[in-house]
Length: 316
Image (cartoon, rainbow, N blue to C red; front, side, top):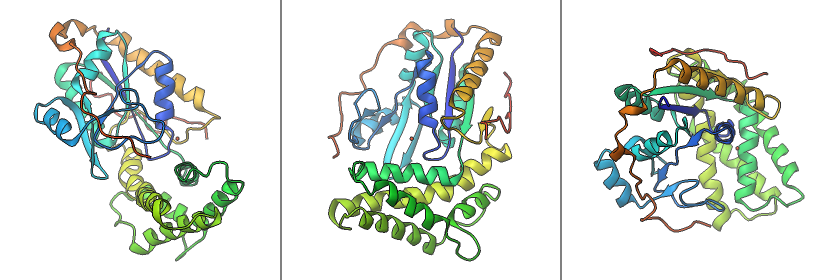
């Protein structure tokens, strides 16, 4: 078969992981990332990630063993070249969730080897992104069964919707989509997000100290990045066409999920049918398995989805 890598990109909580999972159920092969971060509750080594020590990751990086890699929150993430070759050896198109920088790296790698790529970008209104992240905060606080959880989330959303200097945090996020070169969010805005999360913890009856404080302190900057940097540099550049995505969906939820999955599947099939079979260029030695799990780290206690911009074909 023609080697094809499908990348799914979008801001935090946009549904990109769900979309990639649906493609996997339709016989796409997942490319499992390697990472130096610690396992989260419920994650499995070798399935969710290959969990590596910093030393093991650095060694692979020095050996040019990654088709893409990135650092985030002082941790490293990457896809090994052996992961891609493993998928091709199975006769399947590969799929992975990637950040924009990783998509570019993968694109260069694919073009240098005559492989094909399909870039999909998915996002949602800021209100949807924030609600999903608040649900994740509640999960990490192990407060899903708290009878006040739903009420606390709605109270937080109301705080995000309050206007300051004429705009709510949601409206500022939308404004940034069309202005990717806007200055970074102010310190006051970041502190507002921290205050809202602390208020939610108090409403849940949790003390803002110890483990609770650590969880809130980790989520606050991520939420700030989602509403600021990711809107300016990820969504903004996607909508402008600067990052050259092939498919862009402005909403992904239960109402249009099946429709979007079908569109991506059909686009991938069209590429594979139109492109010549280049799998013969994969040497048998390139397909040898590699053990990415030998050195792991210890366990630490988620409109109509229309294609807005078709993107560039990039020679397909």
